[in-house]
Image (tube, rainbow, N blue to C red):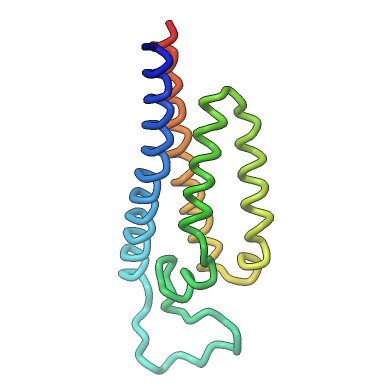
Amino acid sequence: MTVLLAILVWALALALSVGGGAWLTARLLAHVDKADASHRPADDGASPTPPVGAAPARDGVDSPRVRAVLRGGMWIGALERLAVTGCILVGFTPGIAVVVAVKGLGRFPQLRDDPAASERFVIGSLASLVWAAATGFAGLGLLHLVWG
């Protein structure tokens, strides 16, 4: 019975990590974009034209252009949360550093010259990591209760 209960805790922790983290991260990015929009200057047409290749001034972290730059981010975030929560549940917390390093190095080309994409990446990654860690440690606590 305890093995079945442990499997249930694992499944619940991983599912909550992936699903709940996706919801939380999306809500947070939308909130940040909405808050930033209230502080952006209005585009009255009087401002100079930005240089070719520059991000538009009104581009927020949740804009379609930034989402396109960081395409695949939802899948990468889900895999990140799965890996982080799994590392915590098996007791291999150094694996979290590997996950963060791989993600950062893989996204570096897109982030180097795009401040809005960089901001989205940092906010989304931190929210995702905090959620995954909290879920992983909660699951680990439940596993300790199950196994005594």
